[in-house]
Image 1 (cartoon, each protein chain N blue to C red):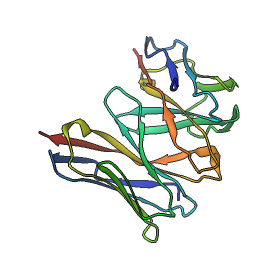
Image 2: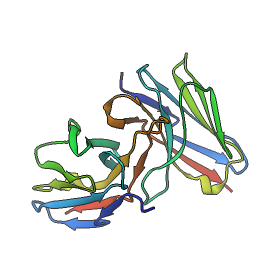
Image 3: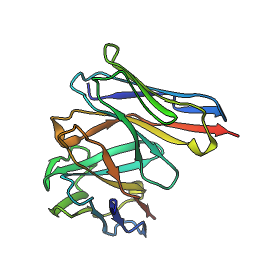
Length: 116
Length: 114
């Protein structure tokens, strides 16, 4: 079984450029989460979707960040324009609520973003 | 009420020793408590999880102890090994709400010295 797939794994860009991060959740999972991890702020939840619908985007830092989930197998996180303070590792995670009460999140390998 | 407080921030243990990481929560609606392990350069990975209907769950060298009345839970790593050196996150979620959203602790960096 393939896990959560993220691309690219590394992204280096210049300030002001648009950045698009991609995520393919585990097949059959119905919730998807975008996180940002930095040394200073730890693991922050940016936004999450349930059945492709955004449920809570209160963690999105500002209007420069947007996320979409056009179908159950694909999501994007876009930063436009990017700034140096956006440099972080961005994780995508997916989860499935089962009748046995399983609710764990499965994380992708992350995208390390560096904005110069 | 959504916070999960984790301690210590960092922990150094000798090989063979017991590592203990503690978490406390406020929201009584939480009913699922997973622990995640993260190695450098990797995403967090589910290590072990517990529901509040039991007070302890053991998987190999890893044990979760759960105290519902105190709203606390802890991870015990027995016979700690250098390969256990990683960052550990506790988390809490409510099975029936919020689409599986988890509230994470701030993480504990564990170093096991050989």
